[in-house]
Length: 244
Image 1 (tube, rainbow, N blue to C red):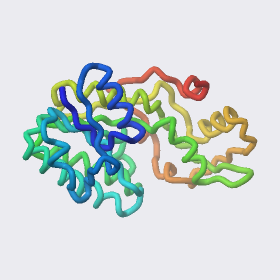
Image 2: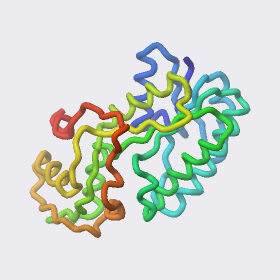
Image 3: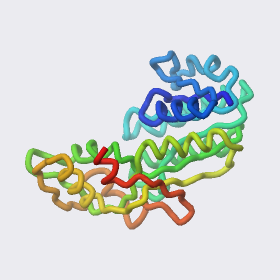
């Protein structure tokens, strides 16, 4: 199969391209560095000339009030071009529990992206993943100083980006789901607990202070970020990933 990977040079996209090509498919990465601008549509006709599948892994450059407009415009452009080119399957990566965190504008924007895909003209699949291990250092930096890191006791079920990429690649080469596949890590942590594990692994002497108002994940209540029983559970544990 020929697959256009939009956002194919990023964290997930580059791994998806590698997995698909190693499996005998022809996956081509597209991004601003290759001449594609999803916001303006520049380069889309060329990128979608020939592929059987398009997977959109492009992310909003910000998590703020600009993110809904970003996803609205980019999805409209992508689906219009995909329909024109006769692409038979569109895949998008989203977030487990996105609709359960309405106080986060970025999560509302991802739900909007899903809705545009669902009502669009191209058969589709949505892969929803939990938070990535790779983002933990960034999460720590948002609410930290030289001595402390403040984190809420929000429950999360993170997973390795490599496992996310594998899940996306598997969906790309199958018939459109016309629905959603959820994937998640094998362990549930509170975010403050995960912070302590991370700092200890890095030899970082800062103290994690539990603060249920700290950072963006404070907006997630109950088990909104935890996968439900239908999720496919990845094998990589956080401690194994840290030890690599």
